[in-house]
Length: 152
Image (cartoon, rainbow, N blue to C red):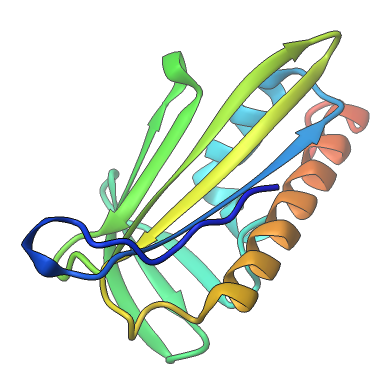
């Protein structure tokens, strides 16, 4: 697992980045399909985040920690097995999830977050714990989906 933070991008804006990875015993297609299912994002995202789809790629994200709704974008690129998201108006954060097959039915999933606004950044310990827990929940959802024949 990797984590990095605190470098200076252009324009003098401090950006904080976090990245976590997990290997899952599942086919990459199954993992990506579950991760990209917008109606089931709440099943694996941090419990404090709730995504409400609008006219995709537009979504609204409700964050329990701040009790605020934020306009965001969510794009799934199935051919690249990649999800990308970020705030729509404020530019407070962006992120991506990349699914990569490792052969023998194993898949590595990497989640990366970049915060451009320290008010949106809950801190390294909280973010890393949330990312690890989300990846664990995603793995469980994939397992339920595959074992249950598509139910999820």
